[in-house]
Image (cartoon, rainbow, N blue to C red; front, side, top):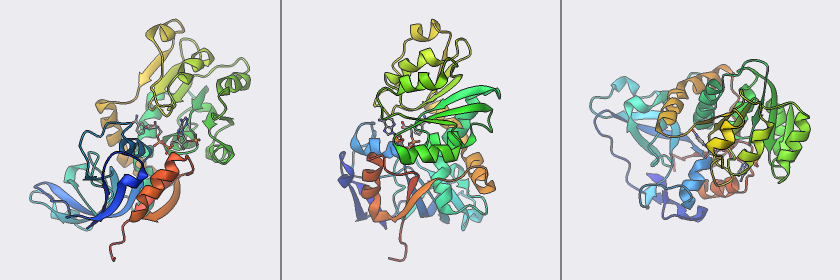
Length: 326
Ligand SMILES: NC(=O)c1ccc[n+]([C@@H]2O[C@H](COP(=O)([O-])OP(=O)(O)OC[C@H]3O[C@@H](n4cnc5c(N)ncnc54)[C@H](OP(=O)(O)O)[C@@H]3O)[C@@H](O)[C@H]2O)c1
């Protein structure tokens, strides 16, 4: 089969289309003929070496895919053959024509949802839902969503009011993303490419405060935000570090302001994210979550997609499509 092999750690050019043996399926596994493979922002960090991969390349790269079950191993339900499903691997093997996974780890794709749209919402939608549940918004609160036009931020922006936000302030980089964040539901948009953006935020708030911050930037700006948050009630949900470092805060910073920081990462958090996949797919199928797709590209364009993500260009997910007829 054709697959994108990560030949080493480095720039997008380490992702190379190669002919490789199809994966094995063991007892309890299913084989999925991939139709739509999302290119995920964290994958660019694993490829570059910024995040540890845990396994030495060369390896078939990629976390997730949507497709059709083509084969089942011993002990897996033969009725699964022909079913449309999504798969989330342990980190390898999804940028490929065929992906194997334990049968109990796949999620059905609801009728009416395309494989492309399922792939687009699978990760970002299933992170946004537990973040919104964890925030426990009251209906009267002001929230800040960072990197609010794309990925997890884009889905948070779409759903924040439904989950109880009264006012949504968004940060984005550049005018195209500002326009998208507004369309997705932001009331106010601030450009986080401006290093003085926390000052712009204070001007926007003009004396009011943020009740909830969905922090994906981390670094030192997280500390700058604390004085804009509602004392005692204010809570920061930290789920990413786009700046290159997690929120640089101490317990003293939080305690003296009466604020709460919730870390939304680690194995137990990721188990919640996995549990939310079905709900994200069902929401998208029912029209309650609008999948954000930038473009569908042939599988051999994986490196190109990584390059554009690193340039912060796309407004939605790149979806890779294997050409099974080639
Ligand atoms: N905790 C979890 O469960 C979990 C799961 C998946 C991902 N994550 C993390 O969540 C964050 C967002 O991931 P995603 O998949 O939703 O990404 P995404 O929105 O698809 O893409 C990243 C966006 O972040 C912005 N960005 C990139 N570099 C930035 C920087 N240095 N400072 C500020 N903004 C920057 C860009 O938007 P602009 O052009 O608008 O700046 C870009 O569109 C990442 O840190 C990721 O690692 C966490």
